[in-house]
Image 1: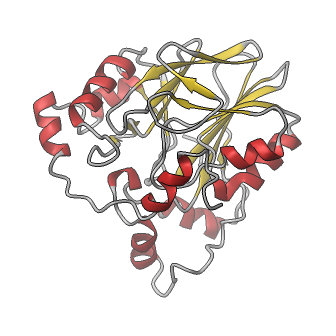
Image 2 (image 1 turned 45 degrees about the vertical axis):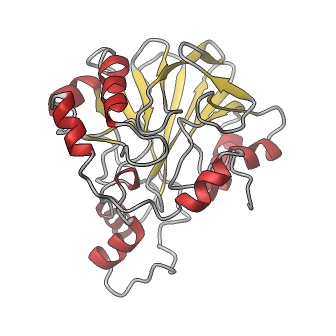
Length: 295
């Protein structure tokens, strides 16, 4: 397993790998929890030591000619994914975050990539997307999101659509349940799946707001994600325990919620009694207009 955090001092790396709780998709007040539990005397308003570091996983993509980079945003514990064709340099970015737009654009420039599409796996409730501002700073960049998200974008995606970049592409699988507009993006050879907030590592997205439905989520995961090959790598939108990747086979066997029957799963999800995400009242309106509302 590769480290999520690199190019940081040992003490920063230790802190960064430790400060992982349950996902905001599961509703905990992450900032408050990490401050109180791990950093006594560290206020929410103080800037963490590692916030300006470039955090990423340098795992090599299994597909020949495919560049892959997993990036991390510390406040919402969101993973952003950058994929590119190593020959043509055409690239796509998945779930970019407003707070890390400079980092992402710097990396894209350093690597000489031509970013074609910025896609969101759903209308996020815990952070604001950077796709709108990216479009202002990169000529020709297109935004994309599910047609069922209710959000504005240049490209509205549906089941089976492909997002091409060079000789590679991502195929859309609709996986609603966390929200109506959740999608999973799968590489052409089905070796990697970017599951957003639908399937997390040993967990799943909450279903108690934004059109959430536990039954639909269970069906989506069983029918659209668990039907992928066992070796297919699962890359979620969030993780709070320092986990960077799983596989379809692992999740089918070990995910504590998804190893249950549908009835048991619905019962679990309907009784989580979680607080709403801290930024939902800001993030959702902004993300409905590509992250540009009051930004």
